[in-house]
Image (tube, rainbow, N blue to C red; front, side, top):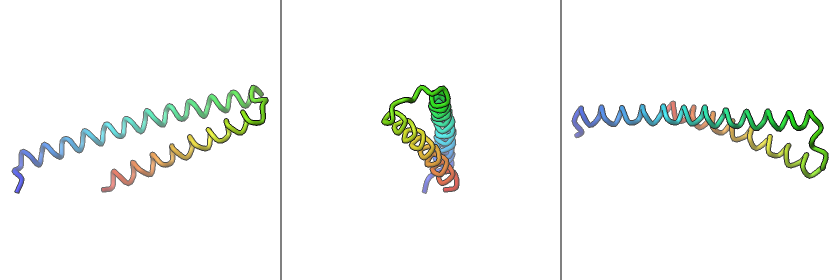
Length: 81
């Protein structure tokens, strides 16, 4: 059986890991939001003129939105365990 000091150390490490993951989620979400905003700005300015480029931008936007959702789900699942 583990002694109290070891258990407390493991709890502190888990809490530190959760804080790091929460910060990572915030950083990644911020970058995704910046990319989506930039894609929207370029699109609104009419800078996407090539059909393939428009398709790529739309797919990138969808990929970013999906990844952002996956991160939220993963963080909620991780926090509840």
